[in-house]
Image (cartoon, rainbow over all chains, first blue to last red; front, side):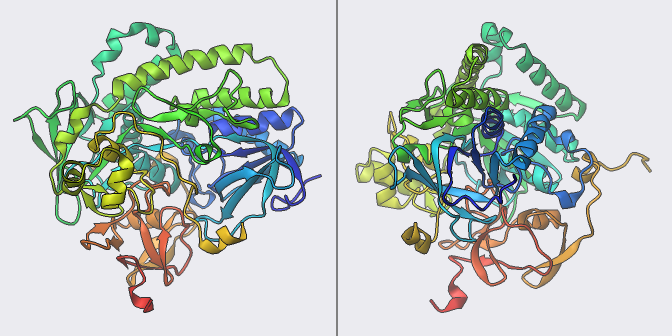
Amino acid sequence: MPVSPSDTRGTVHDLAVIGAGPAGLAAAVTAAELGLTVALLDAAPRPGGQFYRQPAPGLGAARPRALHHSWGAFTRRAARLAAQRAAGRVHHLAEHHVWAVTRATADPEHWTVHAVTGPDGAHGPAPELTARHVLLATGAYERQLPFPGWTLPGVVGAAGAQAMLKAGLVLPGRRIVVAGSGPLLLAVAGSLAAAGARVPVVAEAGDYGAYARSPRALAAQPRKLVEAAGHAATLARHGVRLRSRSAVTAVHGTDRVEAVTLTRLDHDWRPLPGTGVRIPCDALAVGHGLVPQLEPATGLGCATRRTPDGGHALVVDGRQRTTVGGIWAAGETCGVAGAELAFIEGELAARSIAGRGPVGALRRRRDRLRRFALAMAAVHAPRPGWSDWLRTDTEVCRCEEVTAGRIQDAVTGLGARDGRTVKLLTRAGMGWCQGRMCGTAVTHLAGDPAPAPTRRPLACPIVLDHLADG
Amino acid sequence: MSRRRRRTPAALVRARPEPAFEISLDGRPLPALPGQSLAAALWAAGVLSWRRTRGSGRPRGAFCGIGSCYDCLATVNGTPNQRACLIPARPGDAVTTQEGHGHAGLAV
């Protein structure tokens, strides 16, 4: 019997899945097919997460797969989700922004999920939802490093440009430089070029030559090699040059992007003097890999580990359990590794929660892909010399407009040694985004050798009235 | 003249959108397609900024594209601080460039 998606009061779900990207989607359908009752909460109107973002139905896209890799892996699971929704075993709660998970007052073995609704979270609180298990599949967001001119309109996140293209079929310009680090840049450049943009160059700060020096990790993943070859072929077809060990170190223009300066880097990402080249363009898509989205996990006390690229990810065991009983995690939040692994971890978590095997084969595939991701993260991890790109007037915190010079004053003049002290002294990281854009940069500039993961008691900004009601 | 069709995002996915409708930016009419976010409709019209910062009054627009960075805040139908990258465009939506925190006109 189908149940209204909003009618969740009084029901204790076996499982609440937070996030409907590859990990959450795989977990929700697997768990439901094994007989569990599932609530699937997601901020977007349609399942798929950032990786499988798709045009709104009104845009009438007959061939959305042209913007995606492994599209069939998504559509097969989306069909299974539709079947489980129709059977009333999955409540898909779209446009639900989860801001916290707490122990249920009625039964401390159960969990209460708090969310606000609507496209922007402005439609007010959702009815509280209770579940025996919670799976965190909250994904990742893009890591950014500041450089002169990065706040100019026309400079957009590489993942952001990809998201706007996939969902809205739009481009930020006609001639778009792609820069930063990480394999995502190749996919973004390929999509932008296929959609009609001229992409003069992809600038990768890391060293692609490093892959050739670690052939074992690559040889163990033939599918990844095929995927990389596919990107390379797309770029070649569109005349896109790939420049390794190079970065955009300045953006030029008064009210929007007119050109960028591309500079060669040394091994530590320090600009090599005299190598700057000016490249005319009207947009720059930039990003330095992805950062796991750790809320609401850190608020629950789930343990984290350092990742090879200097970030943090959730600690999980062989069954995707976090260190807090009843809280599970899958996908990028356990360490950025891509959609293929996210599907596997979601399924593994669901089988573990349902207590129904076999999980051995899934676990072996998981461990292989995790090893590959670790090797990849090391190649593209930000190197300390990036801060030589900054000038004293470069804004580091976009929300609060805090410059590198003011942060330097807080560190050298006032003795700040960590990101939190810099924040209290300068307001860097105190704005709307809660440090998601500047966090990596601020902790580096503070000289903090082992920054703790940022704790955000509320995963997204909410209206005070909703907090009082919650 | 080249007979090859121009490459566009819509051509890539063979999109046949429902009819466009009108929104406005600071009173200037702009087209939007059903399902596009406000930010997408603005990008399609070549507009990249619709906010000025509180401190130095610098222009800003969409940056992260997924609702994390809050750079794309706009005043929509009189309500400030709306994330343009998340909100679907609706016929008649009036977007106004947000100055600072967006409350200047509200006498608060």
